[in-house]
Length: 331
Image 1 (cartoon, rainbow, N blue to C red):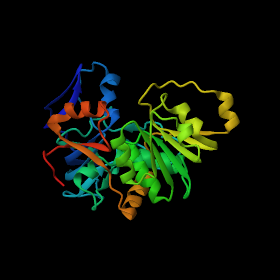
Image 2 (cartoon, one colour; image 1 turned 90 degrees about the horizontal axis):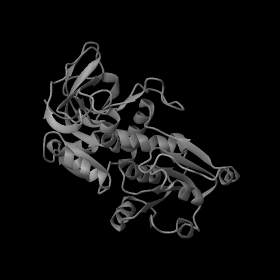
Image 3 (cartoon, rainbow, N blue to C red; image 1 turned 45 degrees about the vertical axis):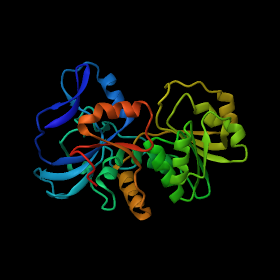
């Protein structure tokens, strides 16, 4: 089958052996996969391993084969993949053995994937294939950060540094549906305008003086994935006793903070990563109720995955980047 893999010192589109369906597994013919920043970092994390690894954590497609013992699905079912392997019930942190699809197991940038049936969910009928294929990782990350960790409430104000990421576009829609006020930042006027169109109440220039621009606002919650470049700036505009949830670090990992200022402000800091199957199912129900759709900013064919990587690296996207496995628009 055709796949986009990391092998040795290269990432490339090539032919590899088609996976075999085992007990408790389903084989899915993928239609769309979703690209995430995680995929960009895996080659560095793997080093020069000689065994090919299919990259990709998000995907949607049709079941073409079921293994022994599978009763919840049958051939022809349209499904999405849950990339959070081994995390079934909501908990303060992932259980031991938790992994994310796409390393060490083969991921979704391929024509077929075999995965345990308990990591598959029915595709929401109101979503296109492109929307379904980019949904799970970013949507679940945002939902847990906003609801489970951030405990957003109606009437509260959420601030999101960086308006264009896939998670940010989910956060805007989720928070507005929950009755919150949403403020975002971006260096791009185009992205700020798109964020407002999506529902953001205010969109500010990242290069502006946040304390000055937001002087009249009370920020109850910040959800940050940037890291060092925005962390302390976020604390500066957070209300006393406010909450900051961090789920990523697109800039440097290590941060220096004024700990006296932190404890005097009585801030609450939470780390968050992905989410459980229980939260994913709650998110899917919430999206169905409010007809929330993932924002698909750009679609590439699977053969163009290298170009899609560069597109994401250059932060050109607003929303998610999709890979069409079958080629062309397949909505």
